[in-house]
Length: 418
Image 1 (tube, rainbow, N blue to C red):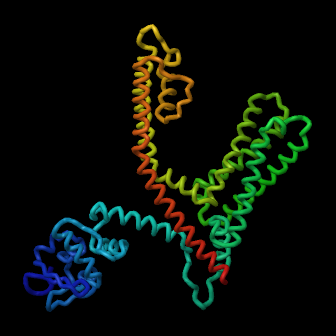
Image 2 (cartoon, rainbow, N blue to C red):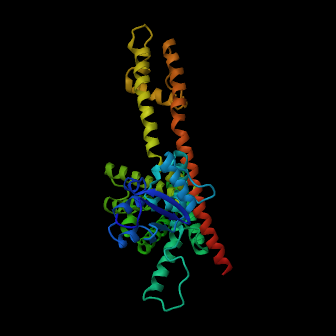
Image 3 (cartoon, one colour):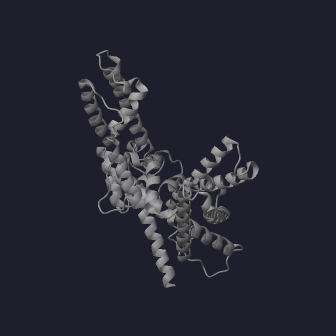
Protein backbone atom coordinates (compact mmCIF):
# COMPACT_ATOMS: atom_id res chain seq x y z
CA UNK A 1 0.00 0.00 0.00
CA UNK A 2 1.60 3.25 -1.16
CA UNK A 3 -0.96 5.83 -0.08
CA UNK A 4 -0.94 8.39 2.69
CA UNK A 5 1.53 9.01 5.44
CA UNK A 6 1.93 7.60 8.89
CA UNK A 7 1.61 4.09 10.26
CA UNK A 8 -2.22 4.13 10.51
CA UNK A 9 -5.20 4.42 8.18
CA UNK A 10 -8.66 5.77 8.89
CA UNK A 11 -11.96 4.24 7.76
CA UNK A 12 -14.87 6.68 7.63
CA UNK A 13 -18.12 4.69 7.47
CA UNK A 14 -21.20 6.88 7.31
CA UNK A 15 -19.47 9.63 9.35
CA UNK A 16 -18.02 7.32 12.00
CA UNK A 17 -14.21 7.11 11.95
CA UNK A 18 -12.16 4.00 12.77
CA UNK A 19 -8.37 4.01 12.97
CA UNK A 20 -6.24 0.92 12.22
CA UNK A 21 -2.58 0.19 11.72
CA UNK A 22 -1.42 -0.77 8.26
CA UNK A 23 -0.47 -4.27 9.33
CA UNK A 24 -3.94 -4.95 10.72
CA UNK A 25 -5.49 -4.36 7.29
CA UNK A 26 -3.54 -7.23 5.77
CA UNK A 27 -5.38 -9.94 7.72
CA UNK A 28 -8.55 -8.02 8.53
CA UNK A 29 -11.62 -10.34 8.84
CA UNK A 30 -13.68 -8.15 6.48
CA UNK A 31 -12.70 -8.87 2.88
CA UNK A 32 -13.47 -5.38 1.58
CA UNK A 33 -11.24 -3.77 4.20
CA UNK A 34 -8.42 -6.26 3.69
CA UNK A 35 -8.46 -5.52 -0.05
CA UNK A 36 -7.18 -2.02 0.73
CA UNK A 37 -3.83 -3.49 1.67
CA UNK A 38 -3.27 -4.81 -1.84
CA UNK A 39 -4.25 -1.65 -3.72
CA UNK A 40 -1.40 -0.32 -5.90
CA UNK A 41 -3.06 2.71 -7.45
CA UNK A 42 -5.69 5.27 -6.64
CA UNK A 43 -8.02 3.64 -9.14
CA UNK A 44 -7.74 0.36 -7.22
CA UNK A 45 -8.61 2.19 -4.00
CA UNK A 46 -11.70 3.80 -5.52
CA UNK A 47 -12.92 0.37 -6.62
CA UNK A 48 -12.99 -0.64 -2.96
CA UNK A 49 -14.26 2.54 -1.26
CA UNK A 50 -16.38 5.53 -2.32
CA UNK A 51 -13.77 8.25 -1.77
CA UNK A 52 -10.21 8.70 -0.54
CA UNK A 53 -8.32 11.53 1.15
CA UNK A 54 -4.62 11.03 0.44
CA UNK A 55 -3.41 13.71 2.83
CA UNK A 56 -5.16 12.25 5.87
CA UNK A 57 -4.98 8.68 4.58
CA UNK A 58 -8.74 8.38 5.14
CA UNK A 59 -11.05 6.04 3.22
CA UNK A 60 -14.73 6.94 2.94
CA UNK A 61 -17.54 4.38 2.74
CA UNK A 62 -21.07 5.61 2.18
CA UNK A 63 -22.67 2.79 4.19
CA UNK A 64 -24.85 2.36 7.29
CA UNK A 65 -22.69 3.39 10.25
CA UNK A 66 -24.71 1.58 12.92
CA UNK A 67 -24.67 -1.67 10.95
CA UNK A 68 -20.91 -1.40 10.56
CA UNK A 69 -20.64 -0.87 14.30
CA UNK A 70 -22.35 -4.22 14.90
CA UNK A 71 -20.07 -5.81 12.29
CA UNK A 72 -17.05 -4.44 14.16
CA UNK A 73 -18.40 -6.04 17.34
CA UNK A 74 -18.28 -9.33 15.43
CA UNK A 75 -14.66 -8.62 14.46
CA UNK A 76 -13.74 -8.03 18.09
CA UNK A 77 -15.86 -10.60 19.93
CA UNK A 78 -16.90 -13.17 17.29
CA UNK A 79 -20.69 -12.75 17.64
CA UNK A 80 -22.76 -11.18 14.86
CA UNK A 81 -26.37 -10.17 15.48
CA UNK A 82 -28.92 -7.94 13.80
CA UNK A 83 -29.18 -4.26 14.53
CA UNK A 84 -32.40 -3.62 16.52
CA UNK A 85 -35.20 -1.97 14.52
CA UNK A 86 -33.32 -2.53 11.24
CA UNK A 87 -34.62 -4.65 8.38
CA UNK A 88 -32.93 -8.05 8.31
CA UNK A 89 -32.42 -7.86 4.56
CA UNK A 90 -30.84 -4.39 4.79
CA UNK A 91 -28.39 -5.64 7.40
CA UNK A 92 -27.71 -8.70 5.24
CA UNK A 93 -26.87 -6.40 2.32
CA UNK A 94 -24.38 -4.61 4.58
CA UNK A 95 -22.86 -7.98 5.49
CA UNK A 96 -22.49 -8.92 1.83
CA UNK A 97 -20.88 -5.56 1.08
CA UNK A 98 -18.22 -6.02 3.77
CA UNK A 99 -17.58 -9.64 2.79
CA UNK A 100 -19.57 -11.61 5.35
CA UNK A 101 -22.15 -14.36 4.78
CA UNK A 102 -25.29 -15.50 6.50
CA UNK A 103 -23.38 -18.32 8.21
CA UNK A 104 -21.48 -15.73 10.26
CA UNK A 105 -24.70 -14.77 12.05
CA UNK A 106 -25.67 -16.31 15.36
CA UNK A 107 -28.14 -19.17 15.05
CA UNK A 108 -31.18 -17.19 16.22
CA UNK A 109 -30.48 -14.45 13.68
CA UNK A 110 -29.89 -17.02 10.94
CA UNK A 111 -33.42 -18.33 11.48
CA UNK A 112 -34.82 -14.79 11.30
CA UNK A 113 -32.93 -14.19 8.07
CA UNK A 114 -34.15 -17.48 6.54
CA UNK A 115 -37.75 -16.67 7.40
CA UNK A 116 -37.49 -13.16 6.01
CA UNK A 117 -35.79 -14.30 2.80
CA UNK A 118 -38.43 -16.98 2.19
CA UNK A 119 -41.16 -14.35 2.58
CA UNK A 120 -39.30 -12.01 0.23
CA UNK A 121 -38.88 -14.74 -2.39
CA UNK A 122 -42.64 -15.25 -2.34
CA UNK A 123 -43.12 -11.47 -2.56
CA UNK A 124 -40.95 -11.11 -5.66
CA UNK A 125 -42.44 -14.23 -7.24
CA UNK A 126 -45.82 -12.48 -7.04
CA UNK A 127 -44.48 -9.30 -8.66
CA UNK A 128 -44.97 -8.72 -12.35
CA UNK A 129 -41.75 -8.62 -14.41
CA UNK A 130 -42.59 -5.05 -15.48
CA UNK A 131 -44.48 -4.01 -12.38
CA UNK A 132 -43.65 -0.30 -12.60
CA UNK A 133 -45.59 2.20 -14.57
CA UNK A 134 -44.56 2.54 -18.13
CA UNK A 135 -43.28 5.81 -19.46
CA UNK A 136 -45.25 8.03 -21.69
CA UNK A 137 -42.91 7.45 -24.62
CA UNK A 138 -43.53 5.12 -27.51
CA UNK A 139 -43.71 1.47 -26.47
CA UNK A 140 -41.28 -0.97 -28.07
CA UNK A 141 -42.58 -3.25 -30.85
CA UNK A 142 -44.42 -6.29 -29.54
CA UNK A 143 -45.02 -4.78 -26.09
CA UNK A 144 -48.79 -5.08 -26.42
CA UNK A 145 -48.51 -8.72 -27.44
CA UNK A 146 -46.25 -9.55 -24.52
CA UNK A 147 -48.55 -7.71 -22.12
CA UNK A 148 -51.54 -9.65 -23.44
CA UNK A 149 -49.68 -12.97 -23.05
CA UNK A 150 -48.70 -12.03 -19.51
CA UNK A 151 -52.31 -11.23 -18.62
CA UNK A 152 -53.45 -14.52 -20.14
CA UNK A 153 -50.78 -16.42 -18.23
CA UNK A 154 -51.78 -14.83 -14.92
CA UNK A 155 -55.46 -15.46 -15.68
CA UNK A 156 -54.86 -19.20 -16.09
CA UNK A 157 -52.09 -19.64 -13.49
CA UNK A 158 -53.18 -17.33 -10.65
CA UNK A 159 -56.88 -17.72 -9.72
CA UNK A 160 -56.91 -14.56 -7.55
CA UNK A 161 -55.10 -12.25 -9.97
CA UNK A 162 -58.23 -10.81 -11.65
CA UNK A 163 -61.99 -11.15 -11.98
CA UNK A 164 -61.60 -13.19 -15.18
CA UNK A 165 -59.17 -15.52 -13.38
CA UNK A 166 -61.68 -16.06 -10.56
CA UNK A 167 -64.46 -16.83 -13.02
CA UNK A 168 -62.19 -19.25 -14.89
CA UNK A 169 -61.16 -20.93 -11.64
CA UNK A 170 -64.80 -21.30 -10.57
CA UNK A 171 -65.72 -22.93 -13.88
CA UNK A 172 -62.73 -25.26 -13.64
CA UNK A 173 -63.70 -26.28 -10.09
CA UNK A 174 -67.25 -27.03 -11.25
CA UNK A 175 -65.92 -29.24 -14.03
CA UNK A 176 -63.68 -31.09 -11.55
CA UNK A 177 -66.59 -31.67 -9.17
CA UNK A 178 -68.91 -32.85 -11.96
CA UNK A 179 -66.28 -35.19 -13.38
CA UNK A 180 -65.57 -36.70 -9.95
CA UNK A 181 -69.28 -37.22 -9.25
CA UNK A 182 -69.74 -38.94 -12.61
CA UNK A 183 -66.64 -41.09 -12.07
CA UNK A 184 -67.83 -42.24 -8.64
CA UNK A 185 -71.42 -42.82 -9.80
CA UNK A 186 -70.26 -44.88 -12.78
CA UNK A 187 -68.98 -47.57 -10.38
CA UNK A 188 -72.46 -48.11 -8.89
CA UNK A 189 -74.06 -51.44 -9.96
CA UNK A 190 -77.33 -49.62 -10.78
CA UNK A 191 -75.60 -47.49 -13.42
CA UNK A 192 -74.14 -50.57 -15.13
CA UNK A 193 -77.48 -52.38 -15.32
CA UNK A 194 -78.79 -53.05 -18.86
CA UNK A 195 -81.95 -51.00 -18.27
CA UNK A 196 -79.85 -47.91 -17.43
CA UNK A 197 -77.93 -47.92 -20.69
CA UNK A 198 -79.02 -44.38 -21.53
CA UNK A 199 -77.74 -43.06 -18.19
CA UNK A 200 -74.36 -44.60 -18.89
CA UNK A 201 -74.25 -42.96 -22.33
CA UNK A 202 -75.10 -39.57 -20.80
CA UNK A 203 -72.34 -39.99 -18.22
CA UNK A 204 -69.86 -40.65 -21.03
CA UNK A 205 -70.95 -37.48 -22.79
CA UNK A 206 -70.50 -35.46 -19.59
CA UNK A 207 -67.11 -37.07 -19.09
CA UNK A 208 -66.06 -36.18 -22.64
CA UNK A 209 -67.11 -32.55 -22.11
CA UNK A 210 -65.10 -32.33 -18.90
CA UNK A 211 -62.06 -33.85 -20.58
CA UNK A 212 -62.44 -31.38 -23.45
CA UNK A 213 -62.42 -28.48 -20.99
CA UNK A 214 -59.36 -29.81 -19.14
CA UNK A 215 -57.53 -30.41 -22.42
CA UNK A 216 -58.29 -26.92 -23.75
CA UNK A 217 -57.22 -25.36 -20.45
CA UNK A 218 -53.95 -27.29 -20.44
CA UNK A 219 -53.17 -26.38 -24.07
CA UNK A 220 -53.84 -22.66 -23.52
CA UNK A 221 -51.67 -22.61 -20.41
CA UNK A 222 -48.88 -24.31 -22.34
CA UNK A 223 -49.13 -21.78 -25.17
CA UNK A 224 -49.02 -18.69 -22.93
CA UNK A 225 -46.29 -20.05 -20.61
CA UNK A 226 -42.94 -18.28 -20.64
CA UNK A 227 -40.74 -21.37 -20.45
CA UNK A 228 -42.18 -24.47 -22.10
CA UNK A 229 -39.62 -26.85 -20.53
CA UNK A 230 -40.29 -25.48 -17.06
CA UNK A 231 -44.03 -25.77 -17.70
CA UNK A 232 -43.69 -29.49 -18.44
CA UNK A 233 -41.60 -30.07 -15.31
CA UNK A 234 -44.00 -28.39 -12.88
CA UNK A 235 -45.76 -30.94 -10.60
CA UNK A 236 -49.30 -29.58 -11.11
CA UNK A 237 -48.91 -29.71 -14.88
CA UNK A 238 -47.63 -33.28 -14.68
CA UNK A 239 -50.72 -34.15 -12.64
CA UNK A 240 -52.89 -32.53 -15.33
CA UNK A 241 -51.28 -34.73 -17.97
CA UNK A 242 -51.74 -37.82 -15.81
CA UNK A 243 -55.43 -36.94 -15.41
CA UNK A 244 -56.07 -36.24 -19.10
CA UNK A 245 -53.93 -38.83 -20.91
CA UNK A 246 -55.69 -42.00 -19.59
CA UNK A 247 -58.99 -40.90 -21.14
CA UNK A 248 -57.54 -40.67 -24.64
CA UNK A 249 -55.62 -43.93 -24.19
CA UNK A 250 -58.78 -45.71 -23.05
CA UNK A 251 -60.70 -44.28 -26.02
CA UNK A 252 -58.05 -45.54 -28.44
CA UNK A 253 -57.98 -48.97 -26.80
CA UNK A 254 -61.77 -49.17 -26.95
CA UNK A 255 -61.68 -48.29 -30.66
CA UNK A 256 -59.05 -50.90 -31.47
CA UNK A 257 -60.15 -53.74 -29.15
CA UNK A 258 -63.90 -53.14 -28.93
CA UNK A 259 -66.03 -52.36 -25.90
CA UNK A 260 -66.82 -56.03 -25.17
CA UNK A 261 -63.41 -57.34 -26.05
CA UNK A 262 -62.44 -60.80 -24.89
CA UNK A 263 -58.89 -59.63 -24.30
CA UNK A 264 -58.79 -59.75 -20.54
CA UNK A 265 -55.54 -57.83 -20.34
CA UNK A 266 -56.96 -54.97 -22.37
CA UNK A 267 -60.09 -54.94 -20.19
CA UNK A 268 -58.01 -54.68 -17.02
CA UNK A 269 -55.93 -51.91 -18.57
CA UNK A 270 -59.06 -49.95 -19.44
CA UNK A 271 -60.33 -50.19 -15.87
CA UNK A 272 -56.98 -49.06 -14.50
CA UNK A 273 -56.89 -46.11 -16.90
CA UNK A 274 -60.42 -45.07 -15.95
CA UNK A 275 -59.52 -45.13 -12.27
CA UNK A 276 -56.47 -42.95 -12.96
CA UNK A 277 -58.89 -40.11 -13.63
CA UNK A 278 -59.10 -39.77 -9.86
CA UNK A 279 -56.09 -37.47 -10.33
CA UNK A 280 -58.60 -34.83 -11.40
CA UNK A 281 -59.26 -34.07 -7.76
CA UNK A 282 -55.63 -32.95 -7.36
CA UNK A 283 -56.36 -30.22 -9.90
CA UNK A 284 -58.11 -28.45 -7.04
CA UNK A 285 -54.64 -27.70 -5.62
CA UNK A 286 -54.36 -24.97 -8.24
CA UNK A 287 -57.29 -23.12 -6.63
CA UNK A 288 -56.98 -23.91 -2.89
CA UNK A 289 -54.18 -22.72 -0.63
CA UNK A 290 -54.60 -25.71 1.70
CA UNK A 291 -53.63 -28.26 -0.94
CA UNK A 292 -50.81 -26.04 -2.20
CA UNK A 293 -49.51 -25.78 1.35
CA UNK A 294 -49.56 -29.56 1.71
CA UNK A 295 -47.59 -30.05 -1.51
CA UNK A 296 -45.05 -27.35 -0.66
CA UNK A 297 -44.59 -28.78 2.85
CA UNK A 298 -43.93 -32.27 1.51
CA UNK A 299 -41.43 -30.82 -0.94
CA UNK A 300 -39.50 -28.93 1.73
CA UNK A 301 -39.71 -31.64 4.40
CA UNK A 302 -38.60 -34.61 2.34
CA UNK A 303 -35.64 -35.13 4.68
CA UNK A 304 -37.94 -35.30 7.69
CA UNK A 305 -40.25 -37.66 5.79
CA UNK A 306 -37.32 -39.93 4.94
CA UNK A 307 -36.22 -39.81 8.58
CA UNK A 308 -39.76 -40.81 9.64
CA UNK A 309 -39.73 -43.76 7.23
CA UNK A 310 -36.32 -44.84 8.53
CA UNK A 311 -37.63 -44.77 12.11
CA UNK A 312 -40.63 -46.89 11.14
CA UNK A 313 -38.56 -49.39 9.13
CA UNK A 314 -36.03 -49.88 11.93
CA UNK A 315 -38.75 -50.35 14.52
CA UNK A 316 -40.66 -52.67 12.19
CA UNK A 317 -37.61 -54.88 11.69
CA UNK A 318 -36.97 -55.14 15.45
CA UNK A 319 -40.55 -55.69 16.66
CA UNK A 320 -41.53 -58.06 13.83
CA UNK A 321 -38.58 -60.32 14.55
CA UNK A 322 -39.27 -60.33 18.29
CA UNK A 323 -43.02 -60.89 17.88
CA UNK A 324 -42.47 -63.80 15.49
CA UNK A 325 -40.05 -65.34 17.96
CA UNK A 326 -42.32 -64.91 20.98
CA UNK A 327 -45.56 -65.96 19.26
CA UNK A 328 -44.38 -68.71 16.93
CA UNK A 329 -40.63 -69.27 17.08
CA UNK A 330 -40.45 -70.58 20.64
CA UNK A 331 -42.06 -74.00 20.99
CA UNK A 332 -44.14 -73.23 24.09
CA UNK A 333 -47.17 -75.26 23.09
CA UNK A 334 -49.17 -72.20 22.00
CA UNK A 335 -48.15 -71.28 18.48
CA UNK A 336 -49.86 -68.31 16.92
CA UNK A 337 -50.25 -69.02 13.20
CA UNK A 338 -50.77 -65.34 12.43
CA UNK A 339 -47.08 -64.79 13.25
CA UNK A 340 -45.76 -67.63 11.15
CA UNK A 341 -43.15 -65.41 9.48
CA UNK A 342 -41.44 -62.07 9.99
CA UNK A 343 -43.14 -60.48 6.92
CA UNK A 344 -46.51 -61.49 8.36
CA UNK A 345 -45.55 -59.94 11.70
CA UNK A 346 -44.55 -56.69 9.93
CA UNK A 347 -48.23 -56.05 9.17
CA UNK A 348 -49.08 -56.32 12.87
CA UNK A 349 -46.19 -54.00 13.78
CA UNK A 350 -47.21 -51.24 11.37
CA UNK A 351 -50.87 -51.20 12.44
CA UNK A 352 -49.79 -51.25 16.09
CA UNK A 353 -47.24 -48.44 15.77
CA UNK A 354 -49.77 -46.23 14.01
CA UNK A 355 -52.39 -47.16 16.69
CA UNK A 356 -54.83 -48.37 14.03
CA UNK A 357 -55.28 -51.87 15.43
CA UNK A 358 -57.58 -53.66 12.98
CA UNK A 359 -57.77 -56.67 15.31
CA UNK A 360 -57.23 -59.18 12.50
CA UNK A 361 -54.16 -60.48 14.34
CA UNK A 362 -53.01 -60.04 17.92
CA UNK A 363 -50.55 -61.67 20.31
CA UNK A 364 -51.84 -64.38 22.65
CA UNK A 365 -48.80 -65.02 24.83
CA UNK A 366 -47.94 -62.84 27.83
CA UNK A 367 -44.48 -61.86 26.46
CA UNK A 368 -46.09 -61.09 23.11
CA UNK A 369 -48.65 -58.80 24.71
CA UNK A 370 -45.96 -56.97 26.68
CA UNK A 371 -44.04 -56.53 23.44
CA UNK A 372 -47.22 -55.24 21.80
CA UNK A 373 -47.61 -52.55 24.46
CA UNK A 374 -43.99 -51.48 24.01
CA UNK A 375 -44.54 -51.42 20.24
CA UNK A 376 -47.55 -49.10 20.53
CA UNK A 377 -45.79 -46.67 22.89
CA UNK A 378 -42.66 -46.68 20.73
CA UNK A 379 -44.73 -45.96 17.65
CA UNK A 380 -46.32 -42.91 19.29
CA UNK A 381 -42.91 -41.54 20.31
CA UNK A 382 -41.17 -42.23 16.99
CA UNK A 383 -43.98 -40.72 14.93
CA UNK A 384 -44.10 -37.62 17.12
CA UNK A 385 -40.39 -36.77 16.83
CA UNK A 386 -40.29 -35.48 13.20
CA UNK A 387 -43.85 -34.12 13.30
CA UNK A 388 -42.70 -30.91 15.03
CA UNK A 389 -40.39 -29.98 12.15
CA UNK A 390 -43.09 -30.80 9.59
CA UNK A 391 -45.64 -28.72 11.50
CA UNK A 392 -43.43 -25.63 11.61
CA UNK A 393 -42.70 -25.99 7.90
CA UNK A 394 -46.41 -26.32 7.19
CA UNK A 395 -47.18 -23.09 9.09
CA UNK A 396 -44.40 -21.24 7.26
CA UNK A 397 -45.57 -22.49 3.85
CA UNK A 398 -49.14 -21.51 4.66
CA UNK A 399 -48.13 -17.96 5.61
CA UNK A 400 -46.06 -17.62 2.43
CA UNK A 401 -48.92 -18.71 0.18
CA UNK A 402 -51.37 -16.60 2.17
CA UNK A 403 -49.11 -13.58 1.70
CA UNK A 404 -48.98 -14.18 -2.03
CA UNK A 405 -52.75 -14.60 -2.24
CA UNK A 406 -53.23 -11.34 -0.31
CA UNK A 407 -51.08 -9.50 -2.87
CA UNK A 408 -53.24 -10.75 -5.72
CA UNK A 409 -56.35 -9.82 -3.76
CA UNK A 410 -55.06 -6.25 -3.54
CA UNK A 411 -54.49 -6.19 -7.29
CA UNK A 412 -58.02 -7.55 -7.74
CA UNK A 413 -59.40 -4.72 -5.58
CA UNK A 414 -57.51 -2.21 -7.72
CA UNK A 415 -59.07 -3.75 -10.81
CA UNK A 416 -62.54 -3.24 -9.33
CA UNK A 417 -61.71 0.39 -8.53
CA UNK A 418 -60.51 1.01 -12.06
